[in-house]
Length: 108
Length: 377
Image 1 (cartoon, helix red, strand yellow):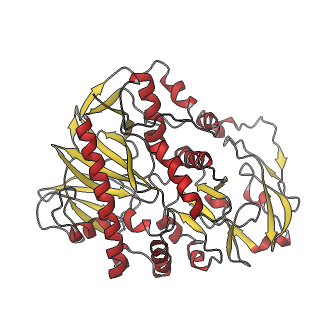
Image 2: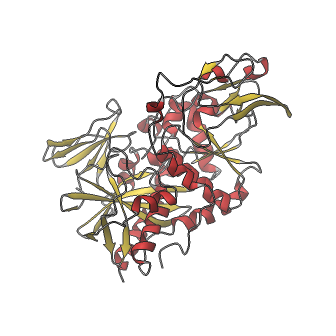
Image 3: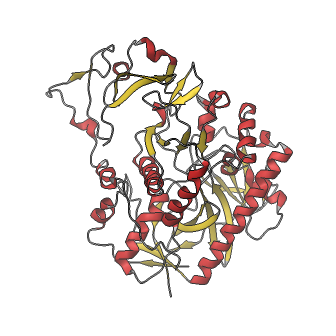
């Protein structure tokens, strides 16, 4: 027999499938009530836009400097970049975004 | 190898979505179960043996490139060479690759090797397996990819740092996300603590010179569905040699030698006239039928096909300024106007299964469809 005897998946893969339902950009209309939010208390407020990547809720960001963890806030791809990263001094030693620029897929 | 048409399952969209396959249809159909290919067991045995042989040849080719320091032919920047050599000499963890094969008239020929970021993994391992359960579960399939992935992650566990393994891919690609999450699924089943991060969220701590996650916690084990050549070309690329933790990147840096099409002329030089290879060179042939391929390209971009010296097919893309190699033309088998390429998987050190992509043109591209297969008898 050349095939797997059984296949079971432990992650919520059905949720992945739900990501492909519709284009969220089309939901944004002039009549909508806008939600203004910020993820970092030192950052600016910004209007949100809808997003549907299922686990792209707020993710904690912080700093683990020499074993001392400091929690700064949350990161979310659903809001503008400048609303994610404020001016908190402790975060200045970490830079992000150095990978992943411009490539929508890496299929091969 | 025979091609058959068949009615799709009535509820096929729901059936594949239930198992997490959300990109079955984009602008054009991607998953196509109105067609399947049937193989005899002796054919599968030959494909399996060919895959194992090619894998061993590729390993010898990597050693040759490193010994002869042929990095310039691969356009690999100097700063990453120590990382390539170190990852090879220390045999750092690697898990998978996919050979693209042409199977025609009883011959098997290697077209290229997707050794760094091969996709269609989930479709090959899971989606076509479930299709066969519904279609005819008594039939066999060349597909133990899932079992071998779980088993090989369990084997690799002892070779990772005793810390979480991060899985990273680009945003806004459901295909890449699904492949990455499937890999993470297999690692979790192997008992590995596995986290997820998007590649553009990866942080570089400029004080400690280490890679960090969203919470500033050092990442020492990183599976990335993100090609080495892109990593090296971007802002963070030059940080890799500075990394104080010497983080493990999976696939490791030496795999970029095999995912580069410059390996094709090297293989031909080492194994001239080998039955599984097509003649390949860095120089344009004076005559004959051949294919010109950029050494770094994806999804059939910027391929030019020549027959008797005349250009017959050409694809567009973003790799037009890249150095090219030339490979003897061996057209994919055509059946009812469709061209099929076999993707034969290596998991760990073993052949593990196969997926088939079918196209309307002789060049496989991102609009090619994934079609299932089975083994008769």
